[in-house]
Amino acid sequence: MTPSPRRGTAYIAAAAGFFAINASVSKAVLESGVTPEQLTVMRSIGATIVLGIVVAVVDRRRLRIRWSEIPQLVAYGVVGIALVQWLYFVAIDRLSVSLALLLEFTAPVLVALWARFALGEAVRARVWAALVLALAGLAMVAQVWSGFGTLDVLGVAAGLAAAVSLAAYWLIGERAVTKGAVRDPISLTFWGFVFASVVLLAVMPDRFGGFTRLDQDTSLLGALASWRAPVWVLVVVVVTLGTVTPFVLEVTALRHMSATRVGLVAMLEPVLATIVAWLWLEQVLSTWQAIGVGVVVLGLCLAQTARTSAGPGLPPSPNNGDQGTPAHSPAPGAMHPHDMRAEIP
Image 1 (cartoon, rainbow, N blue to C red):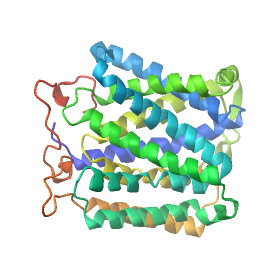
Image 2: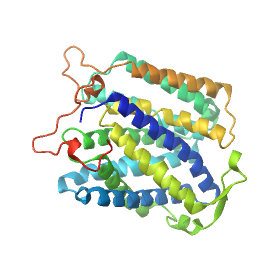
Image 3: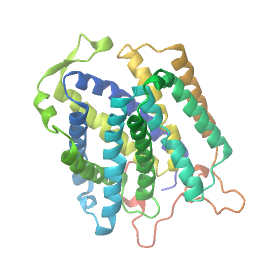
Image 4: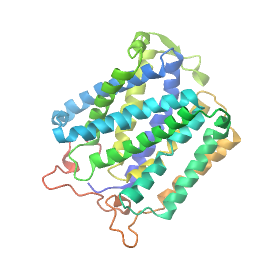
């Protein structure tokens, strides 16, 4: 399968949209009395069940794993899925949501630094400029200055650790579905949630408490406050459209774009989440936030004009899908990604 940067951008932008809508849906679930930890457990278990059924129906051979895959799958599930969620909750418990969000979304910068200095890949100056613009715009959207007066060392540490975990999620996912891998995006996401669920069930307090509220009704809040829906319906939306769909889209995007570019486009998520909250939850969009949205979009447009290429003295980047050539070649004897029936075209 020849990588297509445009297709990859469409996948990650769609994922950001689903995640953004999920934020407001999750807010309605949390207002019913379900705790963030309980929702995280239900989300993870639900995603495991849905993805398991999909893989079993499409190609049950993808449920098999080799011993050699286990370390990578465990790292992907524990570090890239479970830890990101848990660390983010710790951060927002001790900091303002805006500051926690900004700290977490320094992840694309970490990915770019890793690509440049650990992997020796060329990252053009225009990409760095786009990252700076996107981060500046995100700071405006999050109105980060409102949280500076209540800084908590543990909260800041958790936010930065969440960024490291998010960066690891993109980097591990990129390696798992490229570089000659035989693992497709859907089964990779399934096994990631399997191991994430095991960890969350082991460490989360009152992990099953949320299930007792599934038959209750709750308000949809904001502009839809007069509407009510069963909690279980909203949880189904969170699992299917807010978890399974965007996670698979993000991993699939890694077949078409480097983790650096995926992380940059993913910065759309907090921007779109702010816009959805403004329209649905009737949260006020300030002048600074509106300007920030424009700055983030400007940064993303700048990134789309950049093309990763090897600099002097550097070998061609193995992630050079941005130039329209195959980013990775399968290892000898490995199944080509195009032959996987469980993939998204």
